[in-house]
Length: 300
Image (cartoon, rainbow, N blue to C red; front, side, top):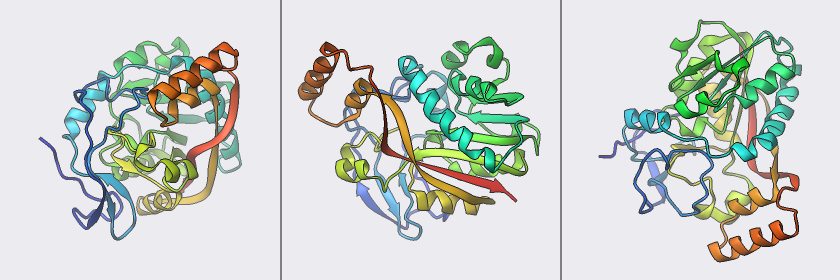
């Protein structure tokens, strides 16, 4: 049973144009389907539509929100080998926002996985770090120094006091929420005045997404909404956050991982990965703008 959605910015149902009809892979919609950074490479998404008023893309219709929460609770940590590179990427942009929020009292990451970024924040001088994460397995794998401060469940402001955090980070997670507007409104409640939200998302206006279109990994069953820099600014503004910075993200990934993302035929992809392994360059780290956008919003 699928449920209709509405635009997270305009709050209107309908009023949209179909961009892609639904293409659901043969796999069941289960916990594996909702685990991050999967590599099966098949097109698998709900119907994708574009709001005629604001331009925001969304999945419509989708499975029930309560089922989404259950699937993420049972999801598995699939990207442990890639964490060092991801940690360096996000750590780089955490340093960038210190000019907007010099206080390092408290930081929250929404969708923190096993807490690797929380460890990076501690290493950068934050006194207190917190996380919100629905995956039971991911939290079980967290380091002791951050595990105690990770709250189990889909994020909501009820998990934390109001006016509590200096910085809230949302990395490749806002797209996964059934109601991203409510997430940002909740962020505003628990931010201190002058506190900031740093969000990094897939960017619909990036060159890789425009080249590969529906074959891009961005178009996926997990992504309830698909953002550009402009629609990110609009949804921030609609929820009381002033955009003070927006930038193209340079991600650090291994060559081997990047090859898994390219939507080539499987035989060609496997061949290229085999060559990279034989030449001992599969783990070569590269910084590339692979299609992400960062936005910083501030509570007035």
